[in-house]
Amino acid sequence: MRKMIILVGNYGSGKTEIAVNLAVNGAGEGLRTLVIDLDKVNDYFRMSDRVDLLTAKNVNLVSPTFAGKGITPSSMSAAVASAFTDNWDLVVFDVGGDSAGALSLGRYHQDFAAFEGELCVYDIVNVFRPMSETPEKILKLKADIESFARQEVTGFVNNSNLLTYASANDLRQGYEVVKGASERSGIPVVHTTGRKEFLEEFLADGRDPRYIGKPIPLETYMHRSWEAFTKGGF
Image 1: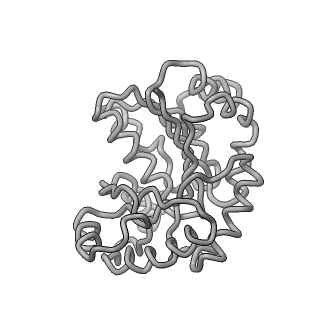
Image 2: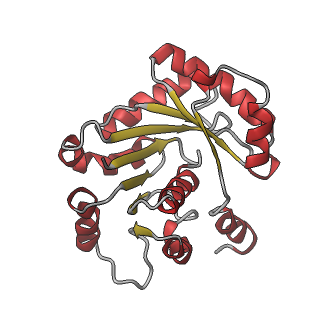
Image 3: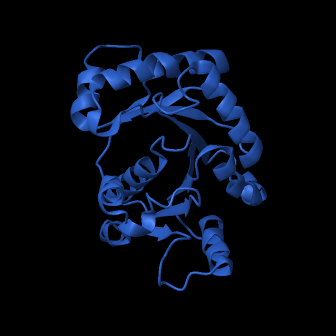
């Protein structure tokens, strides 16, 4: 059975990094994998900047930001449609931040409806981002995103970190906040993600696995673009 994963959440929560990791991991397991970049909000973390890496990992990519590739709005729409018509094992949708980014999902509402039972909608939560610091804020933002995306969140992902200052304590803090959001909403925590060494340290604490989900160690694929932007403006 095929699986579709939609990643939504706050701006800067780490959706693109997780999307790339899920796609690369899936392709590494022999799954025919497609990743759809619907993020038209953030140009600094573009999947099209990693097209060579994704190709080398046997991941197919559809992105609106293929500079010089001749991708037009009409051909972009046709390429996205292939997610629903072709025989993929895994399709990952990376959606722009907040409710504004989620709006791009609305037009595919009927297409997704045909894949009931195969569709997962994951809210990526970094409790160090604005509007995600408390369970109440997480649930409010989730409701806003659901309204625009016309999809209901099926799981939370704790991706709490402070970039180059990250530590296992970030995941510990995120655990408590995301746990609160899960308890209030009944939505399960499906994954906790982070760099391997921090994730292992966090898991060694022995917290309730119901609010950890399946741990996913992350490889850093997207960070270089941010460094290039901050240092050189490109």
